[in-house]
Length: 104
Image (cartoon, rainbow, N blue to C red):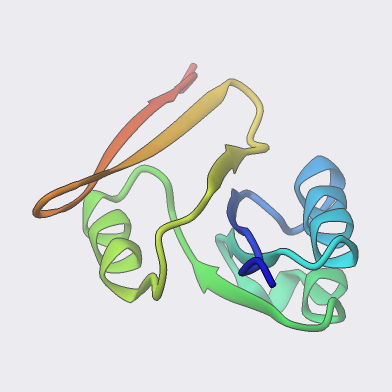
């Protein structure tokens, strides 16, 4: 039996991000979903089996803390935030984050 794939969805409180979380969970993926404020994401909290993490993308401290909390290396990373892209790659010493955001 193959181990389930793991996804990191950045910006999962509603819309595209929430839809991705729901669909991936339906397909048996392990999902870590990030939001700025979990209290404002009741629909995400209703999805069974999702690991919800608080994340402000503009905070390198929060990005580093998320990296430290991740239990397994994600198979894929997706940012649903408009105008942003996130890429996380595994290195020998941990993870590298490459994030571009439209901050205008």
